Image (cartoon, rainbow, N blue to C red; front, side, top):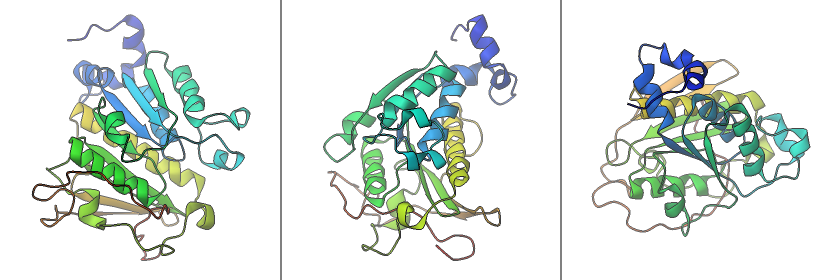
Length: 274
């Protein structure tokens, strides 16, 4: 069992007194590693909460710099960070809230040539991206590498998420199969997104990561959670692995390929609109 310092006992006391977490659960968190792909609307709350929780090693991937238009939802960045690399801005805030965590930064865009190497050291992966090309690539890579991960997507007032344990549960491709034709789904930049919706979904994804790490509760395996913030209606749809899935069925995927059509991801909301 890990030896806790007095400062750690105080910092994580609200976790430690939780019956389902306790010392053992917090030790698992401190010894875990999570990769966050995207330091934007979803990645921002995820990064804050995982750092605060004490996840031992957190990787964060993003090739962009902070833009003024990001600040409406990407809460880990501040006005003074405009123009700075998002990964460095995020790292400063994560280390400020918890100097005990190790933050690895990757200022790059993921593609089929680098994703397997980047995800390899991590126990869990969080998809905080905003386009189908990245989402399908992340799913394929995690299935190929056997890495559990959380999918998330937001648009307008809506959010959706599912958690995948490769070869055991439905994967993203079991549900969506392939990216939609160009122009079918609008982008966040063209359709907009309520900033707080990113926070709602990001905190759910952070919770899923902590549940998987500690073994507490029931992760969103074989389940797609959708919500519409306008009505605050949440809907959980039960899923099954697709026996004909091109990614995870049978021998499954053997080689990664890059996808096109980078558009913002959202499933039909509870009232049937996009």
